[in-house]
Length: 261
Length: 261
DNA sequence: CCAAGCCATTGTCGTAAGACATAGCAACGG
DNA sequence: CCGTTGCTATGTCTTACGACAATGGCTTGG
Image: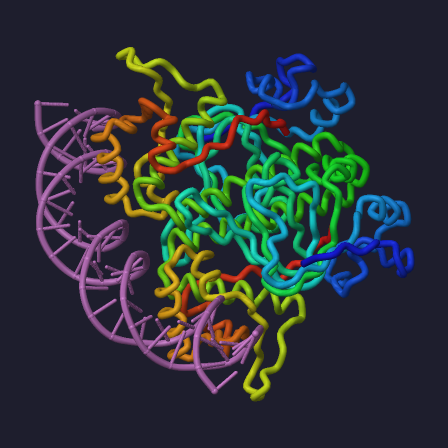
């Protein structure tokens, strides 16, 4: 299902860490120094490519690895004792996976690839080294953690306080915005506006919002009937994101450049 | 409503930062070095005492300050455009408040004192200095952030996937455990087991769990009738926490020593 | 070309939870 | 002493949402 490639194989010195991919321009940092690069080189274990559907991290296990998403989309979730599943968030390129596992011993969530993914693999043991010796990287960790905390809080407020239509709209807008930031929006084949790839299943969205599959489906149908959002066969189309946000009282946070690990 | 005291007034050098209070033994770190102490001294702005009901941080504003809770209990919440309120978490002594505001420009949540509180005030501008020059403190920040992320995820799963009784039980157990860790459990005046101070209102709990006040009240009454939990007049009594957790399929995370900022 | 899965869709029905209204009960203040 | 305020407690009625069931449409694979 997956294989690990040697990070040093066949690439020049300055394409190390995550800088190999197009994510570089999205960072809010100047280029790393040579010293930092050398350190990150040691920290990085390799790259991993996994097929859609692969469980990368499994709740209850103790993974020795941390990841940064380079390509593809994923899903972070917990399974409750009653069998229910809660999707904690959707993962996009640039996301750092596993900070919690580095702190809590045992994993309290699973991570699954929703499409084919390419991951940058780091060694958990080296993580504390990173914090100790690389203040700028350390800043990045805190930045990402704070941002993650912010979005989890936002999710909590949505799941707790919004009604079905508003929940769905919120989730779609959030995903839309994130893909927009990553430059993943494309013009529709029929030429009517933009569309975004959205490979998840309705069940995933339902589990993210604390709704049943059926109710999610019906609510999506309602949004589609009102020409507010159309999500079918892996593609999302929002005719007017701003109007949608206004209709359902959703305030989007503005774009922020993000640091990379 | 509040006043700020000079941190250097009337106390010895080694009682600086947050180490002045009994929280010290709860840390997972060796004592700070003299150098670290000196740095934290600069970082610390003062202490602040606020009365119950005070809004310490207001959503939408830009606070130049970060806090560590020294004494008292508080509440972190967001207000949605539709007027609903979501309580994000309850704050206890040792909690670090404001990491997000240090990263996102504008505050996206409010913080309110539920009892009289004593807070350790830090300067936001000095925060990045801290990360840059104090690797051990920087570790602590990451640790706390990861833990916060963990609990937010847990909250999300609870609000999204549990039914009313289980939600309430989960919240009560979580608060009980936290107070236990802080050594705040007391023997009941009537001599029947332990009790914990719980100064919040039913509305607060309702807003934390995404339930209506009325339903929260009725669910609490049901738990009380079954002798599983009794929360009245600011005091919580759990006759058998383990049994409660088992009954409602709640797995408590074990105690972990926490670092201090 | 048909069978088997996997999802999406839609209808019916039941219930958990919300909305609203009202009452009870301290605590506080003049 | 009584009126106000802030919170808790119940009763009744309504509804958004979940549970269950059946269908249909792609996709994969022999």
